[in-house]
Image (cartoon, rainbow, N blue to C red):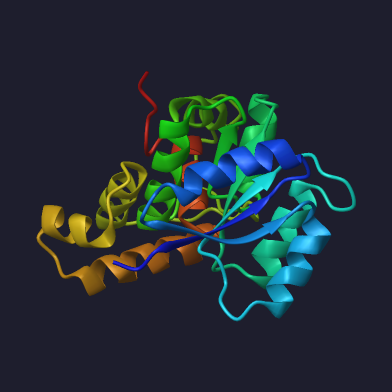
Length: 221
């Protein structure tokens, strides 16, 4: 199995060194890049021969913060999955970052095991959301009666697309969904792409947010 390439962007050197030591102890992880602000990280990406799979991004940094860096990554390097690290756990902030394309949101006081799980899950499924983030997305949703995309246009999704979306929310891979629904993996790929197109979502995390907003997937504590 190829290593999961990780980048770390945080202006606090001591915290950065602590996270780096955790990453370097995991044989499946490779710490590819480090930077102390968003601007330095974008410059490093321009020079990089290989891009990271996942970027762990601090919310508050000088020069360019995590909010702006996430926006730039979504625009310039959409293949890089962003997990936000923050001291703040306000529900609207967490939901906003997922809406803006982040694949996950971790509190800086999370434990080592959750950090490792978040990286592994994001690499496997495209997103990681713990119960705190899922509930934040549910509580801040508008809960419309009709299914609408990000532009407010009413859309329809088929029963099969709804099934696929529910399995996506349960962190199943395309291969696992194909087995559960007894269909070809390329058919699952097609349904996933149709869902992204119809909803206007940027990535898998966006689909989860859409499903929670529209009660296609219910968060159960």
